[in-house]
Structure formats: structure tokens, C-alpha cells
Image 1 (cartoon, helix red, strand yellow):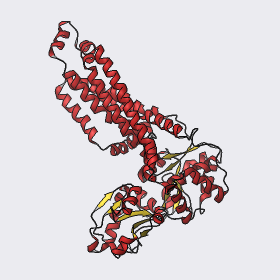
Image 2 (cartoon, helix red, strand yellow; image 1 turned 120 degrees about the vertical axis):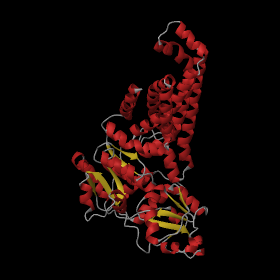
Image 3 (cartoon, helix red, strand yellow; image 1 turned 45 degrees about the vertical axis):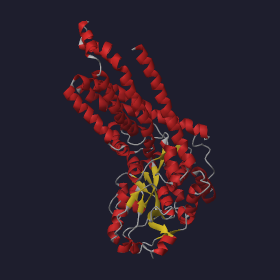
Length: 500
């Protein structure tokens, strides 16, 4: 048991070896919404103008992308001054730039526009309830209004908690949903109020009323570049290129670009970014493509490769650890209860929470907290229970007569385990590995939240854009891969059972 406990952190540390080469190009991060992706694509194309290799890294919300920047997993990303003060620094310092510099981060001047938080309603609903500003929502007769917000807005100090307190809002019916679905729910009258970004194209598309922030709760959210101080040393020309965007993006222009990406045509963000840079800054399109094959087949092959990079090493490592744990659980019943309980607890942790928890753990172990390592580590932990449980079940289910036969043959305990018990339990153990593999394929899609790639990337982008085709680009291959793995393990199980 002691050896196995020592093996687990060792395996977690070794998993980082599956994340690719140590040297990396300039990496521009983005959050999981359209505007951030468009701006990140602009950053990538500007960086490539200097001749360096650069690519975009899709991440989750503010905590994940800020952590990636400070850890060195990305080099730059666009954030907003209100978010920096209220959410990242959680103070309003006299000199934001100096406070960031103390953390090894530099901030550019405004890119030329603000993207503020606001609340919005359907115009007909707002008119029927005589609502034009946020303070109107404080009326007691409006306490039953249904609100739908993104999870980050519900948790942020400059989001719903602070807003509710500042205005004395009585609403208690609050649902959390992704941004695109909140707009859909608002249009379909499934909710009455949602939060919006003032540069969202959907505001005009759905003819919504943006409620006036008449008591001035929300700060200004000026778009700025945040970049690592060492980027100025490694690639000063890249910093110069990124800062060319300062003062060049008007709010109406940003709204127009968002509308192009999320409207009926759902144009590609790279194309939108390239066209803006061409006419606003005279930047020629980058000669370096984002990928070597941008066809549907090429994208599916790429995401399949990324997905297998998450599933295969995590499953292999889990089998190496879980089978010995299952043996311990079968041989030592009292200790076995502890092992089964511990792996069962791991299985009850929400997958996204475990994924985010593994970010600082993997940063401490291997120095990389974003991308494949934390995703692989989380999948490894999720795979333990079915393999441990099936190993335990397979070994304890062996008839006593067969065990007695091994003893009669004079086999020592470990020889009996290796030559008799494990072969007899093999079909059950393989069934556990098979279950873990199928679970891994589905759970690995959440790796898209932290830049791990795989099928989660198109699924999450499709959710953000409301693009069913894009969602299916990840969902269908994930289902096919799960069924393929199920069939392969089923075949192996039948072969093992026949030989056994």
C-alpha cells in the first residue's frame, strides 16, 4: 500500500511528459467568448509579423487565463480594466500598472473601446413592467423576475452579488447558463433578465433593452493587453506589434466584428481579425497558417490526436496504479474499505472542479498548470475507481476451491496471485478498464476549458457561438471514439475469457 501511495504522485508528475515539447512559441491566450478569441487572433497575426512562431491558446474564464499568464503558459491576452481591478487584483490601486508590474505583468493603453457589463431585457417585457434602469428592478412587485447569468457573473464581486447589494435587488430566481443560451432563453421568455457585454452583437440582433446603470455600480471596462514582462526581453518586437492596436478599435467596430462571428453567417474569427488588421493597420495576412489542414477532416484528425493524448496516458497510468490498489483491497479487507472509499470520493468530485483543482497541483509538480498535464491528471484520478473496484470484485469472486488448488500445488502467495488469481480475474479487470476508458473519452472534453485541446475545443466554441454544426464537430467524433474503444475492449475481453 505504501509503495502504491508513493507511486501516485510520481505518476502525476510523469504525466506532464505527454504534453509536448518544452520549447514553445509566443502564445496568445483567450477567454471562452467570441470577442476575446477575435482579439487573440489579432495578437497571433501581429506577433507573426515579426517572424516568430505564434499561436492562440483557448482557455476558460478570468481565473484560468490570469493563472496561465502569471505561470508563463501564455505570454499575453486581452482583459478589461474593471475586471483587472475588481476580479484579479481585488483592489482599486492608485497605479494599476505599477501593481501589475510587481507581479511581472505589463499593461498596454486602451485598445480604444470599453466592453462594460450591463443588464438587458426584452423591450416588450421591460415596457410592460415599466423598467428602463437597474434601480427599477428593486421594486418589490418585480421580485419574481427570472434571471439568467453566466457562472462567472454570479461569482464575481463586480457581478451579481455586488450588484444585488448595491441596488437592493429582491430577485432570488437566478439560473446559471452560458452566454449564448442566456440570450436564447431571454428571447424565448424563459428568463426575464440577463447580463450582457455592451459590445455584444446579439443586443442589436434581438433588439434588446440595455438597462441604465443609474447608480454607477459597474466600473469602466477598457480593453487592454496584459503581457508578461519577460516578453519585452524575449521578443520586444512582438510587444511593439501588439501595442499597435492601442486606440485603434472603436466600440461600434468591435460590436460589428462580434456580430459577424455570432450572427447567421457565423464567420471565422481568424478571417474577421485578418480583415480588420488589413484595413485598420495595413497588416498583410500572416503567411503562417493556424494549422496545416483547415478542412473538416483535418480538424477532426487534429482534435482526435489531441483527445487521444489525454485519454491514453491517463488510462495507462490509472491501470498501473489501480490494479495494485485493487489487489491490496482484496487481500486486506479492512484496508480495502479505505481504498474503495477514497477512490469513490474522487469519483464524486465534479469533473470541472477537479480539473481546476489540478491546475495548481500540476504547477507545483511539473511547472505547467495549463493544457494537457492537469487534464491528464484529473482523468487519471477519475479512472481509478472502476479499475480498483473491478479488480477487487474479480479477485474476491474467485471460488475458494480454486484458491485451495493453488495452495495444494505449493505456490507461494505472489505466484498464486500472478499465475492463478489475476488470470481468472482478468475479464472483470478488463471490464473496469473498459468502463474507465469510455468515461475518460467523455470527461476529456472538459479539457477545452484549460487549453488541453481535444474534442472539447469545437464543442465549447460551438456553445459560445450557438453553432450546432461546430458542436457536432466535437460531439460526434467523441461518441464514435467511445463506441470504438468499447468495441475494442469488448473484443479483448472475449479473447481473454476464451483463453481463461
